[in-house]
Structures are given as structure tokens and as C-alpha cells.
Figure (cartoon, rainbow, N blue to C red):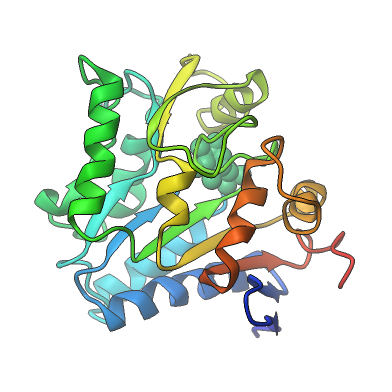
Amino acid sequence: MNMAEDAGVAHSPIVSVVEHYDDLSQRAAEAVAAVLGRKPDAVVTLPTGDTPVGMYQELVRRIQAGELDFGRAQFFCLDDYLGATPEDEASLTRWLRAEFLIPGNLPENHIHYIPTVADNPALAAAGYDRQIEDLGGFDLAVVGLGPNGHIGFNEPGSLPTDSTRVVELEAATRNQSAAYWDGKADIPTQAMTIGLGTILKARQIVLIVSGKNKAEIVRATLEDPATADVPGSWLVQAGERLHVILDQDAASLLSTR
Ligand code: GLP
């Protein structure tokens, strides 16, 4: 059962609080499917991490059942470690290929890999933003929220005008990343991420957050004044283009709940 509760007013983000993680996954998959339904050749970016696992399972289920088709969409990878290739054990792109891109039958020529192995990463990052722009910009950016408020790998200190670029990873983020590979992988100190400025231009942004351990950073993101200390807080300026989907645990410290 989906115990969703929507509280959106004009020019404010739309915040949906659902009961459990499974409801969040369904709701997020619905948001993606709705955009693809309206615009089959949509330009999208979707996140990696623990939070979107259920969303990907539902999207893959729908694609394999013939209910949804990503065949005309253009897909841009959100972030990865600098120098990582899909052959490396610790690669977000590798993870994404296994969880979604391959089982979801995305055509290889519609998948844009963030250029983490370019000779000149700064130049390549600017080229990646240009590719997004040339295709008309993002119709949809689904993002998660890091424990320190990061979006993609836009770590604390990031600005709402930032473009796609190389960033330094905080120790806490590297530890969080290492946990994806049972702590065994050596996580680089730098990464490449689509910038908040590029994400903020998206026609729709969906922020998905689950769990009690994220409740305080969710509260700070949505209720405190926007600050570079909590990069996710910049997303609020997208107003009603931002749809926040939370489970009850993640929403538990919001003052309006
Ligand atoms: C990771 C990724 C982000 C992700 C976030 C939350 O480091 N770079 O793209 O959204 O942190 O991850 P999780 O869903 O595992 O909590």
C-alpha cells in the first residue's frame, strides 16, 4: 500500500512522504516512467548508490514486461571516480551498467559515460556539459543525497552554478563509497560529477532519500537556508521543478511532519 502524502505549494518543491522504502522505489520509478511516457526521447541522468536499487528493479521489471521503453532516451552518467573505467571493481559506471543499463536494454549509442579517463578531464567535463546542452538539456535528473548533503559528487563547498568538473572527495564520502564494495576497494581521492548548475537547469529534478540516518541532513537540506555546506540545499531553488520523495524515516525530522 502506498501511504503517500503530498504537500506542494506553488514555487515550493513538491515533497512526497511515503511509508516504506519499497513505496519510495515505486514512486521514483513512476516519476521516471511519467517523463518517458510524455517524451520517449527524454534526456536523463539517474544516480548510483543504495537508495535507487529498488527504483532500478522496478524500472527493469517494467522494461522487460514491455511496459516501458528506454530505447529512444539519452542517458548521462551522473558521477564516477576519476580514472575509473567500467572494468575496475570500484566504478559507479560498472555498477550502473549491471543494475540498469544492461538489463534495461539501453542502446549503447544513447549512453553517455562521464569522461573520467580523459587526458584532459577539465576539457572533457566541459564537453560533457555541452553534449547535454546540445541535446536540449535534462528533461529529468534523479539524484540521491549523500550523508554530508552531497548531490552526485558535488561535495560541501559546491555552488549552484557549478558545471561538470573534477572534485576532491571528502574522507567520509570515500568511506561511504568503499562500503559499496564491502570496504575492499581502493577509492580514488578525486571524482568527476555533473555539476549542480547543470542539474538545476533540468526541467524536472527528483530527489530520493531513505532511512533514519539521513533524517537530519534531509531536514537541513529542505528547511535551513541554502548553503554550500549542504549542497543539496541549492536544489530547493528549483521550486516546483523539484520533487522530493522520502520514506517516513528520512522525513522524520521535518518540522511539518
Ligand atoms: C554517493 C553517490 C551519489 C549518491 C549518494 C547517496 O556517493 N555519488 O550519487 O546519490 O552518494 O548514496 P546512497 O544512496 O548509497 O546513500
